Structure formats: structure tokens, C-alpha cells
Length: 410
Image 1 (cartoon, helix red, strand yellow):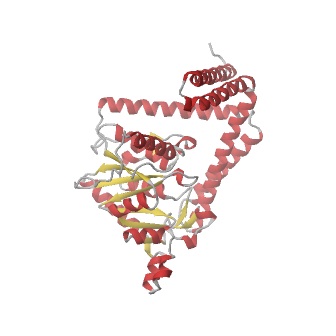
Image 2: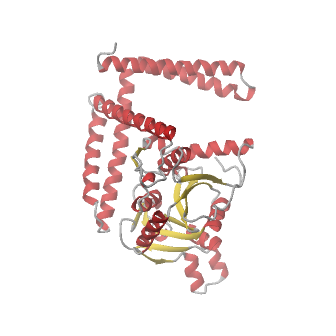
């Protein structure tokens, strides 16, 4: 019987160590009996698993300290994100900066304590992790029960529960893992290539896109949405105001017709798009339309370099040199652009007021409660939540499409 935290930790390390060793031996067996093309990889994996198993079993304090320091780094990232967001909100004269500063300072203090005394605060890490895993497990169990009972979340009389997102350390890599999974399906012929189709011509169709592409920055994904045939995509289109490599910029958004926008993303940007279709009732439709109109009232017309060059009548050769993302999108689709002059999206921040927060806030403010969830909001967590809703019955997420010309580089 486990009667103390120390006993629990010993058992936990033993179970993890045995599990790693088991994976190692299975990989070694695959190296002996597997196909020639996979033997070397299986051999290396098997050896690594067994070595890690031995290290975990013999170096418990090292791994406990490592876990604490990982939490410390995550807290530090959260602290920096909140402090920068608070400064940007303060600079833009938008409310909410005090809350950002407060949680930034708290996260920074927690990070310092864990980093310089990792073993002394391991209990706090275990408590936080335990509570999170329990709540996450309960959330998943409730989703299973709801699916079994066929709870009608499409009916506005039924209030959906708030879902809990995956930890950001896992969710951040969902887009890249999804890209690899879909590429494998395309390569094996199990998924239709260039699946590019219009949604049904029904009242109130809404589609949320998650963009997938391999790369250090692109691998985290991008999010935008299509409503009434127009795609609204928030980002850092204004290259002349970009700072820190585009992490901070003037907040701009593109408004593009659906078909040329998807075509441009697939062909020029070489992206794969996963589109989740949502059916809206009349009230939801009107609320969303009003929320988009409210957002657009905080903007003014903005033009790409190519639009300015055309307006000034510059030579064609000079216009061809306008190859920034906004100009390329305009050239391919005739997109229009707006720049935020007020509100929290006046300044784009990759870790705060970004593309997915823009989409999430519009949907939440429009009263689409089932699209809300707790936790870090990233393209990965949003994709996971939309996927969950699609797989459940009786939700407003009715369909999912993959838009691609075939295998995307990974």
C-alpha cells in the first residue's frame, strides 16, 4: 500500500523505468526480425530506451530536478508573455494590463523558486500536475458520457460545459504531428488529394481553418475563419512595423474571398488547411455578423506595398518586386486589408494577441459557447477542441475537410 509521497514517487519512477525498458526490448526484437529498412532505426531506439530506463531508475534526484526546471522554464515563458502583453496593452491604452502584469510577476516568482531550489519545491510541481491530470481526466470522461447520451449541444437550451485544453507543451506540436499524419495518409492513398470543395449552400455556414506547414515558426500553425464567403485572417501583414522578427507588429487583417484564398495558401504558401464547418442558427448568425462588424469598426483601410505601387503608377518591374506576404495575397486574390487603430488587436503579438486569439474572441463574444475551452489558446489546442466537437454527436461542428494538393513538405 502506498502511504507516503516518497513511496508514490519511487513506484512512479519504477513503472516508468520498466515501461521504457519494455519499449526498448520490443525495439530490439524489431531490429532482429523486422524489415531491412527499419532495422537500424529500431536498434538505435531500443538502445536509447534501455539506457534511459537505467538512468531513470538510478538517478531519481536528477530527473526530479529536471522536471522542476522544465516547469520553471514554462513558468518563465508564461511570465515573459504576460509582461510583454501587459506592456503592449498599456501602450495601446487598452484595459486588462494590470491583470497581465500581476500574473506575469507571479509566474516569474514561481519560475525563480523552482529553478534555484528544484527539489525543495517538487511537491508543488507534483500537486499542480496531479490536480491538472485529475481535472483533465474528468473532462474527458464527461465528454465520453455526453457522446454516449447524445447530448444535444446544437440546441441553445443545453449549455455546454467548459472543456480543458491539453498542456501547451503538448498542444504546441499538434499542427506538425497532424501534418505528418495527413501526409502519411495522402502518400498511402488512404486520403483524397486536393480535396478542395465548397461548403453546402446553406444558411449561416461558418468554417474555421487551421493552417499546417513544416518549419520552426510555421510548425505552430495559423488560424482564421470564413464567414459568408469571406475569409478573415488576422496577422502581421505590415512588414514595415514588424519587430523581433515579426513577433510584434501593427495588427492587420486580410479580407479575402474563400476560393482564391485557399488556392493561394495551397499553391504559393504550400500549406495544408484543415477546415471545420459549423452550422449556425439565425440568432448565432446575426450575433456573429454583429461581432465582426464591431471588430471592423476598430480598423481603418490599410494597403499592401503592391497596392500603393499600383496607385502611384509605378513601372511593372517595380511592382513585381513587391513580394511581401500581403502583396502576394493581393496579387493572387484581390484581397483587401484593414489595420486596427483601437482595441486589444491594435498591436499583434505572436504569444498574445495573435491569429487564434482573434478567431477565438470573435466566436466567444458572438455567443458560440461550445467553441470555448479553458487553458492555453493556440492553433494546436483550438484544432484539438474542434476535432473533439466534430467527433462528438449533436454539436455545431458538422464537417471537416482537408485542403491540399497532395503531400506537403515535412
